[in-house]
Length: 112
Length: 116
Image 1 (cartoon, chains in turn green, purple):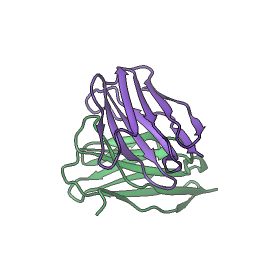
Image 2 (image 1 turned 60 degrees about the vertical axis):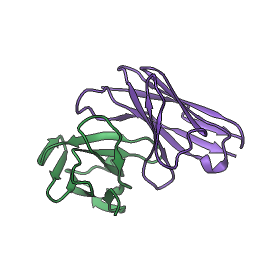
Image 3 (image 1 turned 30 degrees about the horizontal axis):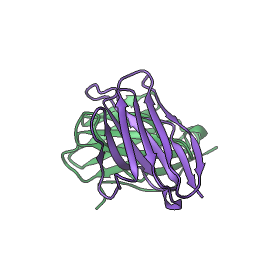
């Protein structure tokens, strides 16, 4: 079992709709969870991070964490073509800045 | 916000030569930086943790004599790919954090290495 699992996609969503990206992790002791967006040929950029169970909202983005189910998701509301990218889920065993374990990413395409 | 600069962004070298990649934290000090490698359509794989003033910690399967890491100051870490081979061609990305509790990692822009 991979430490961090994501559906590779591609996931196609119409413009204006909600895109839902999912991630599961194997280490129940994981403490911090991150979503990065990566455009082709570019390095990842941080979208959101979450530490506690529940939802965390930032603009059009909402991160959801369920530690009991070892599940973290990212919702993108009012999807825009510029949201088309690969979204990487990353997990850390602590709340510090130690090394992250990344999933393989989900490729999202927003259809105009 | 935290900015991490990486140079060069793209390099082509001949097999057998060495290539140095620099990673700088521009507006914060980083006692720890991380070096990742990403092959096409694959995820980021951590290669090593660069520690200021001490030896780097390498992940299993990463040759420390091939990928030399130097973290000589609180704002600069370098990765040198020695005796590069075509299979070393990849996207190398460094990352760092301001080190405050809970502060996430920020990534440099990456270096695309092509070994011919």
